[in-house]
Length: 343
Image (cartoon, rainbow, N blue to C red; front, side, top):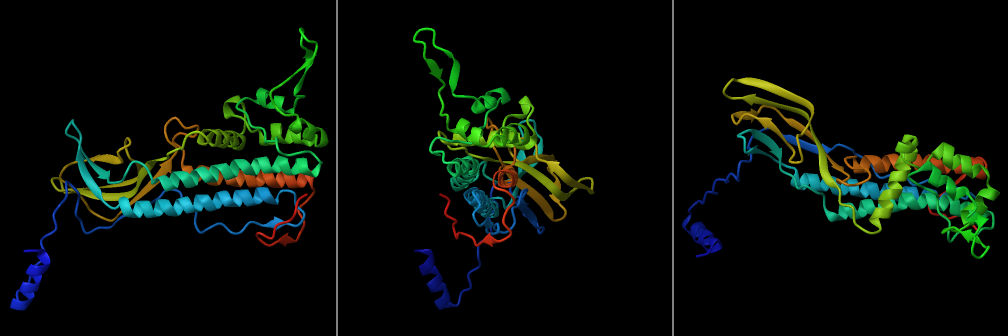
């Protein structure tokens, strides 16, 4: 007899059926208190539409940064939904040495849609820099199909981007000057815009901090490395940076209470030590973050935090280019997506 048919018979005979008592799965903890899980980095509401300026050469870069922020916001919303669905309970776990721990039940990695969206955001940020020098090249009548914004780990190597791609010394065999393996497009642009050299090398500093770059230039270098890596392999962030913002529990044997505040979880299993007889005493508040995976150029850093930081710095770079190469921004902005034709 099926469950539905037994219910119909029971209703006809006036028998009241009682629901079966819920089963306790594993060592999950049942309690009357509320455990709140939230993102360590929140981006708030969707970003406002970018402000575009009439006749500005760099509106396309502004649009790209805005698109990166939109991707980051979408990823943040995906992560909130993921945490609401999966990070909804605490459990007890015993180590081989007999130590008991509270553990947040959550998968080790966010969904693949999160990784793909972050990948798109990184690509937009890197492209926004290329758009800057490409717009300048078109403005000065230079073809833009082989020009990129120079980034390198070592400052000395970066300086070579501003040098003549044809070597000064002739080949001892044929007498011809050897050509380096890169285009002379950027060098021609530097000839038209001499300030480009010191702005990039000394002001922006897009090389590694190990070679003396400032923190923003180092971040540009690392975003560039992430973008290059993502062209060949999908970067998969991991759940990490989990911490207890506030959590109170009581030991039943000693009748003593203990409050934890701003304490990070030990290891990758999102757990911290307790006594077996410990029970939750009050509402708990936990933070969960998504970080760059081991082996990444930004290993252990908050994904959303670094993307937001990079977008803010690139926006400042755009305004540096605006003021130096085209003058101050016009006072009247054009509305979002009313594109200005740049010939």
